[in-house]
Image (cartoon, rainbow, N blue to C red; front, side, top):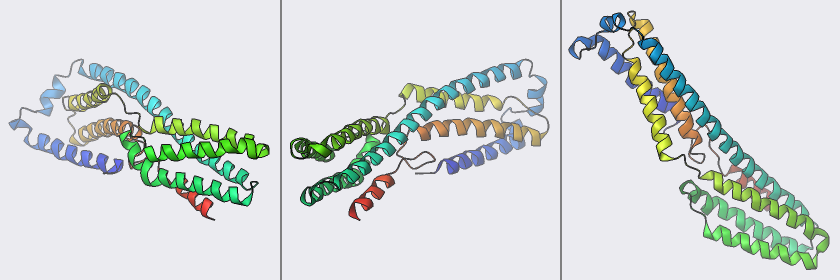
Length: 252
């Protein structure tokens, strides 16, 4: 998967090539910058309105996607922290039960890393991980009668884990509606395309003006796309590193 920065650079290179071809060969495709400049009229104001509407529209989407990302990141971090709390409580259990406890948690974390994490980007739950979680629930329930002193604290932490886990699963695959994604892309393309019809006589200023529009437009779409795919490699990417560290902690 191409990194967001490489995507942006690729688009800018293609645009630069297209721009200079138009300026150099414009007369052959009826693209004359002098004619465009003389016939602008109220186009600049209309273009500014379109740009402002797109900026407001994109801002709402980015804020919404950013909130989802924050919820996902916090849920994952809290889930891992609660497992650490459980492991600390387990040290107070009898040796045999403590070993059984750690083995159950180790098995569950390994399943998250090796099975569940690969299925999350497709919105599929891991059945084996769900089964391991149910087994641990039975194990913790048995503590209520055998070791009631520690059971309440362990059960409370386990209930919090269930809550954070549900949030992690829900927000790992929360795709933007297809129509909304199409709308963002369409408006982005329209905004960039219309900039070609607002000419500036100086080729350097013309290039900088259009390059800025293309950069901003593409960056907005790339950011939205990146936030909408939190488990895909990118600037906002949630990995299973936290669970891998938890596994190392269990094996110590």
